[in-house]
Length: 74
Figure 1 (cartoon, rainbow, N blue to C red):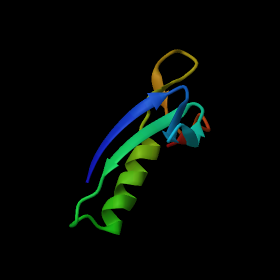
Figure 2 (spheres, rainbow, N blue to C red):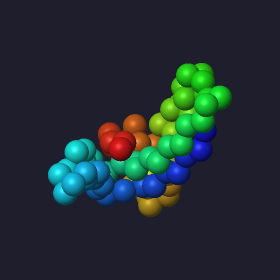
Figure 3 (cartoon, rainbow, N blue to C red):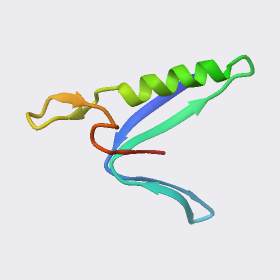
């Protein structure tokens, strides 16, 4: 399993110029899954992603997770 994560203020996915999904502040996740990847691998990765402290707190320090800011994921 390979993953690229980007913090975003907003993001969307469009197909044939039609918006299929959109989010406000949160995480844009690009995920590659291999034949040997398991559900346990996915569950481990989800726990890691939601726990990443990559959003600024009130002091401007990266100390909040996507859950802390009530962010979204796409």
